[in-house]
Amino acid sequence: MKPALFARAAFVASMPVLGIAFFLLFLGSECSGQVMYGSTLSQIKKIGLGACQDTFIVACPPLNDMAIGPSGLFYGINSNRIVSIDPGTGTVTVIATVNGMIATSLEYGEDGFLYALGQTLWKIDPVSGAVQVNGMLPTGWVPMGDLVYLDGIYYASSTTPQGNKLINVNLNNPAASTIITSLPAGGLVAGASVYDPVCPKLYWSQISTPNIHAYDVNSQTWSIACSSVNWGLGGGDTPNDYSFPYVCGCTINAGNVNPLQFNLCGEGATANTPYTGGAVLGSTGILRYVLVTDQNNPAGSMLFQNISPVFGFVMGQMNYGQTYYIGTVAGQPQGGNVDLSDPCIDFSNQFARVVWQPQPSLVFTASNPNICAGACKDVQVALTGTPPFTLSYQVNGGTTQTQTFTSTNGLLQVCVPSGSSAQTLVLNALGLSDAYCSCQ
Image (cartoon, rainbow, N blue to C red; front, side, top):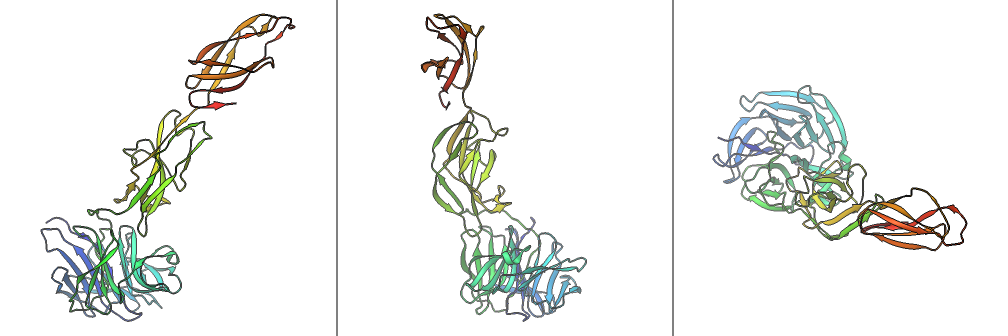
C-alpha cells in the first residue's frame, strides 16, 4: 500500500458550545478513497465521503474541536483544556489548562505547535503544555469553527461585519487576517483539507442542514459532497502532510506585457514596460514584474522581481550588450515576491526585449601637440562602442566639424590656417555617437 496523503478540519459552533470534530484524509487509489475522522460528543468516527457512511473508532470526551498530530495522536479542546486522545486505547491526557479560553477551532500547525482559535488565538506546545496568546482577530470577526491548513494558508469559517466568510488566519498577527471568499448560506462549521485525485479541496459541514460542502481551492467554487448526512459534523484535522502536489489545472494567470524592444544607453537608462492586463490572481496571489536572461526559462534565469515595471542596469550583476527580457509572474507570495516553488506559478507568454549598451568614448593621441601655421597633423582616434561612430569636434575653438569612423580606430586630420601664430593644438570633442548611443 502506498503512503496516505492527508489533510485536516475543525469544529464550528457559537462559542462556547461543545461540538464535534472531524478529520479528513485521502488514501491511495488502491485503498478505500476519501474519509473523514471526527468526534461527536462521545466518540470518534470514520466517515467515508463517497457513501457518506460512518464507522466507530474510539470513545472520547466532548470536544469543541479536534486535531491530529504527525504521530496520529488526536488532540481536542475540552472546555478550557487541551487534551490528547490515543486512538488505539482511548486514553485521554490533559496537556494544558487555559484559564478563560473560549475556542471552537484547533489545528496542529506545520511548526509543531497547536493553535486554538476563538476571537483570540492561543499557541500551545503539545509537549510541555506551555501556552501563549498570539493576538485577536479583527473587531467583529467571530469564528464559527475550524482552522484548516492547506499549502501555507490557515483557513477558517467566521462571521464578519461583511457576512459569513472563509478567512485566511494570520497566526503571527491575527488582526491582519484577511477575507478569502463568502461561505454558502447558513454558515459552515467543520472544515478539513483533503488531497483529491483531481484537485485539493476543503470540506466543510453546514450548520443548519445535513450537507458537507466541498471548496475547490483552484477554481474557488463551492459544491455539495454529501447531502444526506445523518450524524452531526464538527471540526477535524489530519496528520501533517502539509503540502501536497496540485495535479489539477491552475487558473492563476500573469497576463502579458507589451513586447517592446529597447536599446538603452548607459547604466542610468531604464526600461518601462507597459502591462497589457489579463492577470488572474485569486484571493491570495500576487503579480510581479521580472527581468530574466532566458524567456524560455524565466524561473531558472530570473535576476530580479519588481512591483514596478521599470528596470535599470545594475553594474556588477548585468552585462552591456546582453539581451534581457522583462515580463510578469503571478503566484503565491513569499517574502514580498512570488514564490518560485508555487506549483501554480505563471509567467507572461510575452516578454519585452532590452539591451543596455555602454556610452561610446574616445581617446585622442598625437605624437606632438604643437603644429605650425598652414600645416596639418594626423591625430589617432581610439573609440569604444559599436561602429559606425560620428564625431563632432572643434580645433582650437574654431568651426564645428564632423567625421565618421567605420571602426574603433581611425585618423583625424586637423589643420591650422596659414598666418596663424604658433600654438599648442587644442582638439575638443563636442559629441560622439555610435550605432546605439550618443553622448555630449
